[in-house]
Image (cartoon, rainbow, N blue to C red; front, side, top):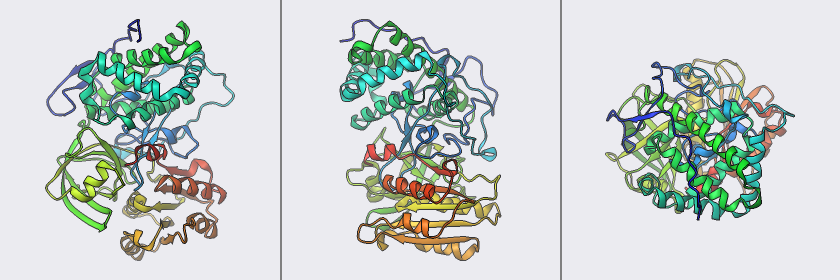
Amino acid sequence: MFEARHTMDAPTTRSADNGTSGGGGGWFTPRKQPEPGSGPESGEGPSDAHGTAATGDTAESLVSSDDLAPLAPSTGVAAPVADTGATEPERTSAPSRTATLAPTAQEASPADHRVPVQRPAPAHRQASPDAVLIRRTMAEVTPVADKVTSYFYALLFVRHPDLRPLFPAAMDTQRDRLLKALLTAAEHIDNTPVLVEYLQSLGRGHRKYGTRPEHYPAVGECLIGALSKYAGSVWNAEAEAAWVRTYTTISQVMIDAAAADELRAPAWWHAEVVAHDLRTPDVAVVTVRPDQPYPFLAGQYTSLETPWWPRVWRHYSFASAPRSDGLLTFHVKAIPAGWVSNALVHRARPGDVIRLGPPAGVMTVDHTTDNGLLCLGGGTGIAPIKALVEDVAEHGERRRVEVFYGARTDHDLYDIDTMLRLKQSHPWLEVRPVVDRHGLLQLPDAIRDHGPWSEYDAYVAGPPGMIRSGVDALRDSGIPPERIRHDSVEELIVTGD
């Protein structure tokens, strides 16, 4: 067992409860109350957008907000993206010198949202001393990752049993996410802007779990306990000090972001199911009415909790641009053994009430350019693509929009009629269904055959394999990586829902 109790620096904010939000009674109040409308700079609109080009190879493509359960990711990075019909995604980011991590600029409102410029870590810069120590620790514990994460949660729940209700009943997926968060943090720890943006969105997203400032020291103490047990010969006083410094600063960024977010948004929204359209035996289009205005951008996604699986949140893309009636629509594919997806497809009915977390995602349209849009949607990944088309139409733009709608069979083109009606209404829109034949991936070939695409911004949504092959095909077609946007795929592989 971990002998010495490592004391983490206490957060410098207080927790209050104004009774207007859920989450186990915790609102975060910072040292100085932020002015309404101000807060940590996030580079995103409503909650959790990340970077201009969220390609699979960039730090920002890994970043996302709240797919991780309440407390685990507070040490580093990693989280999700929209459900594309396979499972759900995740992401990450990182800092430069941990002592410099701090909110920097005013947070953008949804109406003022612009996709931020990507800020990769400076090339050829020597790693900071703390980064070297943290990466060395992670290299040591990765081969025994299962033991590290299991020991961490055992410590946390034994020493702090009051925290157990904040986590889902089944912890298998949660353990995987903790390790992914730590590995991502270690990888990007010297990229301060990216990590700060991620941490701020993570802090905002964790409000819905009921995370409070006083929880962070407990998590840090148990994290260091687990690392010290399994890091072997590389763990010493210097390594421990590096982790304490990094974790303490990371925690404060998250706490401050949550406090600022309290001034402008609830921790969650209740939403009533008003329509349930079963398009295929395993795909449903679910429409809900939030209990209060829900600001989001076309192309984003949200986290969603059903009444049948408390504390289990999954991510789904909005299937339309914001509507005047305030309704929200999601396309959900029931995944084998997927708790939330099966509940939404086979159990949900009008009148049921679900909960929504804050909006998130990078696949938003940059309306400051007149580049064409090349959109690849596979399976239920067509949902955010449809939203992007509607967004372009509502802005009255005449930009070329090319949509490739990929599916395994004709039967899986469940929303093709909707897309073709949009095509009839908008002469600047082209829709091309692409069905795989005999198990062969046809979408990459179709992209190459209809190019070149050098004057287009690309958007990709769908199952992990489709995203990877689509990104490769787009690069081969001459589209620069910084103009390829998609929500990350790592969590899709992990969650199985």
